Image (tube, rainbow, N blue to C red; front, side, top):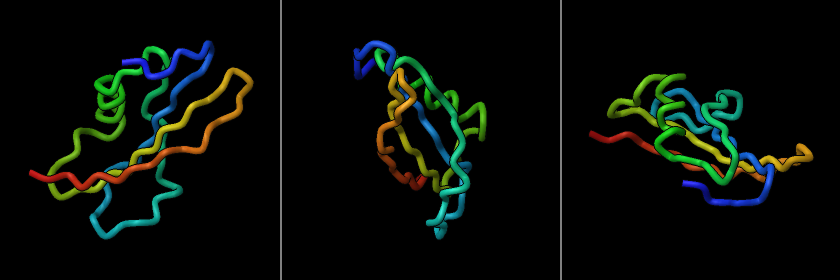
Length: 88
């Protein structure tokens, strides 16, 4: 659950739709799939947001996910990004 208790800070999760494993340039594919106050972040809810937007990933696909904090004044942190190859 929540990872940060700073008042007013929001966590934003952005992800790409499933792409082929050879895809590496996804800058324009990211879409917001989840956001919540940082102190109540839930990975399960973030996955549900992904599935609602793009469907459940299947074996052989690749997805990119990045997470950032947004401060009450609108300033955003540098996103942390990961790539996941979906396996059976």
